[in-house]
Image (cartoon, rainbow, N blue to C red; front, side):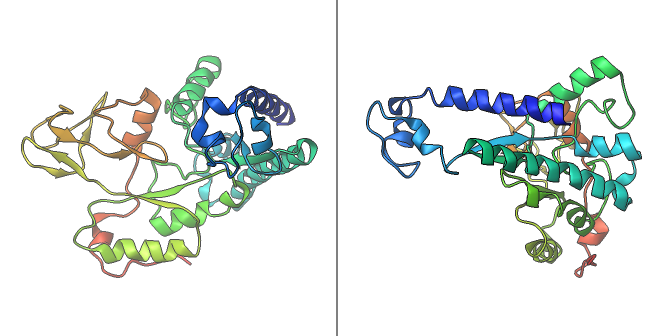
Length: 289
């Protein structure tokens, strides 16, 4: 891990050096018009805006689930030793960032990255090198940051309790999310999760199906295909006559209008709902404390 951290720091310092080559005229809104809190003149040193914690160099990570799987097996989520081990990994990443900041005077932070394309790229490279390893490289994607395995079915409270220990070491950014079926008939079920999340996590996304077919009028969850999604009623997959919205990473996207990389598509289509339709139909959702 020390070798990989040294390589990561080298990459971040290269990025910093390249960024410092910019001049205020390259991005006037950022450097000249005050978006960074100061207004630089033409020819000013942009480095003045980055020092003393005013900007951050982010050390991103993905695949913590796969690390736990390698050491403890694919059902490690309820193994406290395994959970503590993976939390310790993120803590050490944060410790390294604090050490680098003390040395360099620039702010370094851990970023629980959504890995838009690296989820595919890193897994592809490892699969070519090590082969198809069950629940690690054979999936064709790596799990985002510290997230619970998307193929499993913890309820929202269990998922958030599992994940809540990691973000305190990730000041560079993070997101939790839960998958739901249609919640229109019982918004109280969703509100119960939100109330619980308020005391446990800092940033929560809610994924509920809002796909729509303009040919047959279907509204709900489109059916995944090998390369995209289609209407489960009429089979329509034309981006001009349907609207498909999925949480691509940390943001929402339309994979029909802008297809995503293979690994991300597999990850999205593998996601299991964290609340069953039966639970949605129950007004009082049981919380796990």
